[in-house]
Image (cartoon, rainbow, N blue to C red; front, side, top):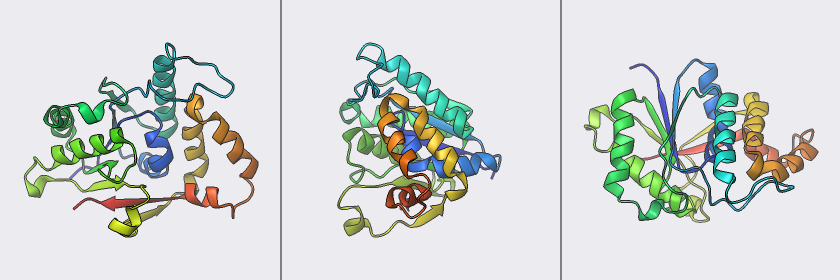
Length: 218
């Protein structure tokens, strides 16, 4: 089976924080990635630091930032599903699953990455993960790709245990930082803080960025 990764997240920058390292490693290997982003994150609280966006201009800004992050990561197939930020929990599960299933049937992914429903803090994260898993599980068992899930609620380790697989992404650390920085409206303050620590390899924040853990959804 030819490798092809499908990433399904609800917001621009979801791909940068939790998965940018793995995605960069995979694109370096020549593996194509399709990224289905459900919303433009237009209800995001951050407007830049200092402010350069407002509620009216933020959607277009975040769309451009998302494309910039995909360019950094080598993602050539970006799908915008056009749903409204902070409303995914109210979307019909079957309809949202249908949208994702169409992409699955088109690209036949060898791996799917999304959020672990119930363990991803934000209702949009949970709803997106649930719809993605639902879409994958519509396939016959022998055709289902593995699903790598991001989970980071306070009950994650207590309920799910440690991640099933952890990737060392230190070799693409600079690429991951660049992908995070591409989402300038949301991350400028964080990037300034990280730049102050960039030479301290023992800093806990940097260690966290150099490893990515995933739960394999059964």
